[in-house]
Length: 515
Length: 103
Image 1 (tube, chains in turn brown, cyan):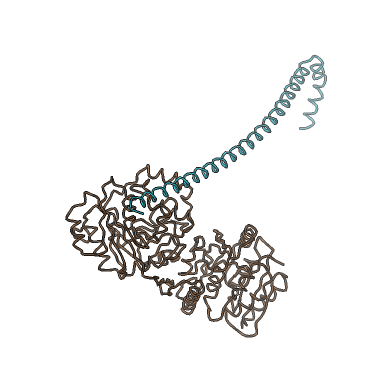
Image 2: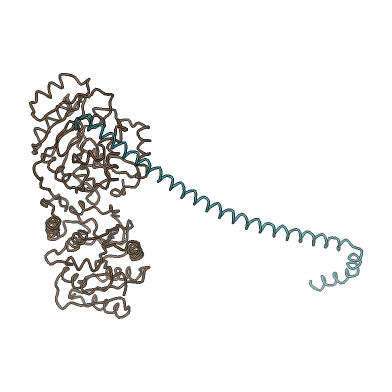
C-alpha cells in the first residue's frame, strides 16, 4: 500500500493541461504513490481514452468512471471512499505538482507521526506556463483561515480523519475543500506547514485562481462552511463579507465588559487637518463621539508638567468614568502605562496613545470580541497616518521588528488578502493594543526596561513565549498621528536589550515571511 | 492589592520573565556558537586531512623528482664518457646515411 494517495476528480479537462497534470505526477521523485482519478462522466472521449491508457500502463493509477455527472463534491467523495493510502493529497485536474512535492510530504509524515493535515506554499501558472503569484504562507493561523482559505493547495489529509469528519459534503460545491480543511483542522492533532512551493495552480478563464469572484456560489458556500465551523467550535459570532472575496467573523461581545482605556499624555498639541489640536482631547473626543461601545473608563496618565488648561479641559468633558493619574517620574512610556493599568478596573485594558483618532465606530467591539477568547493575548487595529496610508498593519519580524505594510493603501487587500482579513501576527503596535487584564498582569505589563522604544515588541514576545496568539484586524481602524507626542529615535541600549532578550526571534516571523 | 503593590507585582513578573528570556537567549546563542564551533572543527579537520594528503603527494613528487634528477645526472655522465664519444664517432656514417635515405 502506498503511503500517499492523490485524489483527482476529472471532468472534460482540456487535454493539454491534463497531460501536464499527468506528467507532473509521473515525474515525482517519490515513486511510492497511488493516484485515484475519478471521471465525473466526461463527454470528451479523448480525456477518457487518455486516462484509460494511463491506468493500463501504470498500476499505481486507478481510473474510475462515474455513470452520471454529479459535480465536484460527489466525484471527490466517491474517490475519497476508494483511497487506500494513509494520506490523501488533493490535486485538481488542470494543476501541477512540483517534482519534489510528494518527497516533502513523505518526509513530513515520517517526522511527525501524529500529523493529520499539512499544507504547502503554492504559486500560479498562466496559459503560457509562466509561474507567478508565489504565495509564501504563514504557519497555521486559525483566525486567518476563518477569513480565507489560505491553506488551499497543496492540502494533504490523514485519510481516516478526512472520512471521520464526513469527507466532502454536498452543498459546498466550489468550497468543498475549504469546508473539509475547516473540519479536519478542528480535530487535527498536528498541522504542518511545508514552506516550499510544491503546487502550481493553473489560472485559466473561469478559474478561482484568477479571481475569487469567478465563482459566486463558491463564495456563498465558503461563508456557510465558516458559519458551521463557528457552531462546531463554540465561537459566538456571525460571518460577514469582508470584501475582495474574503470573510470576517464578527464576535459577539459577552457580558458587555468594562474596557479601561489607558492613555499616557503630556498634553502635546499638533496641527491635524490644518487645525492646531490638543491630542489627548482630540483622542477622547473622537472615542466619545464615534465609538458605539459604551462601557469604557478612561485612565489618563499625565506628566506633572502637563499644562493645567489641558487637564481642566479633560475634566470639563464631564465623563464620569475618567481618572487622571499624575505621573511625576522621569519619562518612561512603559511605567506610565503600568501606572495607568494599576488604577484601572476593566476586564479589558486598551493601551492607547494620545495621538489617535477613531475611524470605525465598532472598533472596540472588534477588539474585545477577539480579546475575550482565552488563547488570544493581544489584539491590535489597523492604524493609519493622517494621509490615510497605513501606519501599522501589525508587526513583522522580517528581518527585524517593524510596522508591517507602512505606507500602503488600507483599502487594498494586499497580497493574498494579508490586509483584508484578521490574522495571527507576531505583534501589534503599543499605540493601540488590547489585552485582557489577567494577561497583562501575567506577563508583567510593559517592561520598564524599555522606557521609549520596543516596549510593545517586548510585550508581544512575552505573550508569544507564553503561548498566546496575537491578532491584528483591519476591521477596527484608527488614525495614528505617529510620534507627534514623543521622540521617535531608537535608543541603541534598548535595541541591545531587546536583542539580549529576544534576538533569536528576529527574522523568524511565523506569520509574515515577506516584507 | 493597592496600586503600588500591583505595580511592584508587574515589575517582579516582568523582571522574572525578562531574565528567563535572557537565559533562553543566552542558551540559544551558546548552542548556535557550539554548532558553529563544531562546524569549524569539522571544516578544520577536513582541511587538515586535505593538507596531509597534499603533503603526502608532495613528498611522493619530491622523491620522484629526486629520482629523475639522479637519472639525468647518470645520463649526462654517460654522455660525457670516452666510450660514448667513440661510439658516436663510429656510428656517425650510419647517421649520415640514414638522413640521406630519409630524404
